[in-house]
Length: 252
Image (cartoon, rainbow, N blue to C red):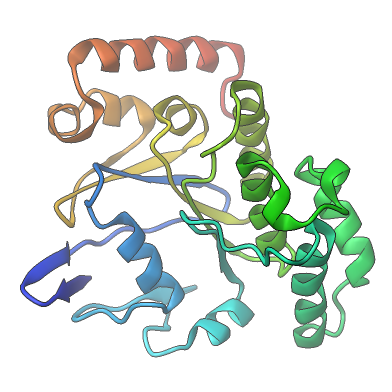
């Protein structure tokens, strides 16, 4: 995949996959091209070269609407909720649209009630979306994305605005969403969250994928340390925490 803006190459021959059943991390420094890749996957940005494949089919020429119907949903780094609507109505709108696409989908109100409860924002249901805390708005966007029953869920900085305990609960939710059979692709700067919940991590730097692997492989990669993770001490701290968590809750 290649994306250029004038003389600037934002994405430079970047290739990666996100598998169903996995939480996949896409990490890298600011300006590495992560959000640009999200825009290409969802159809907001056309690539200069390369293709986007979904379930083996080339969807590069599909519109954002067509991709959503296929089961691709996303959240945004900058909050994109309907501010004048309530939290409930934001999610309900997405559920009603999905019902028009899929006649066998569940009752939109029941879907909405289930989702606001599932992501932990039921207590904010009747508040305007532009009046709730940032962390709540992030979870609202997640619930709205889930309302279309996506098979590929893209999350751009989803933990921004969440407290420590909220982030831990959110990470557990991501694991459940993936285990339900979805592919979850996440851009995130919270390295503790990334290392704890991701099955596979792709590291992007200057538009190129410089490393792909498990959390253990990524935290031990010298290129990643130099490009993104910072000092050796930072990496050791993250590694020790992840190893402790893996002992307590091994995969499988």
